[in-house]
Length: 278
Image 1 (cartoon, rainbow, N blue to C red):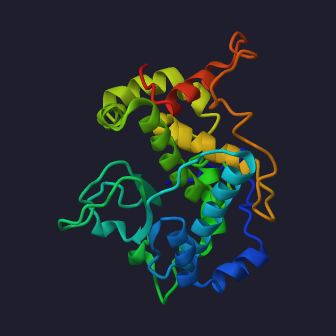
Image 2 (cartoon, rainbow, N blue to C red):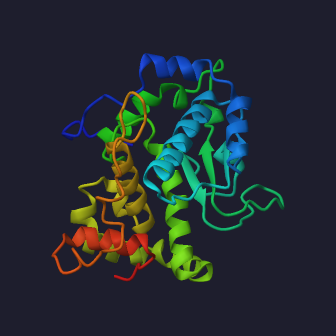
């Protein structure tokens, strides 16, 4: 990935404080796994403290949003850390992905249910017990932001992004049904759809980040996670306000249904509700 030195979106402030780094270094992974178990989420963090701690903080943020603002944001069924070279996936070098349907992701007959999040361990890059990506999360977050892949340079964006995929799929399935959702997936990741999608939405979605221009699912994940991050107190990781209320995603009510709104907002609401037609 080429670094775009002319890009003005350079902050180098991914947000990990000294206190947070110390918490990661001394975190108790079995204790963190127990928190997820109580929430009904299966985990296998493969001793990766950074992923375990960041996943915990992401869970706490979503739970706080649900409790404080009476939201009903869905949670994943599982979080698994794995070297993606061991999986049947074409995204060998990606940081993570969310499984949208039950699949044989492992080389064998193990079926992984839908809404399980995988994070890449990048084991082949480890040397002397040091993982150059996850152990340098601040630098990695800055790099992706500088290259306009991520919407923010915040260290939790990767984690929130994958959690949002779960929320998004859950919302679509509730509104349109699981079968209809699964039929839509091959279409929206096809080359022709991508070409048409870029033509219509690139100008608007590229203002979020370039990755948002990939397809409707990524557009929502990038925008939604950015809105959550913008609502956080960067030191306490607590939400300061209800981001969802001021976002494009709630159903329009009688007070605003006749008001004009930006085309991008309408598109994001449609994507959120599984309306993918161009």
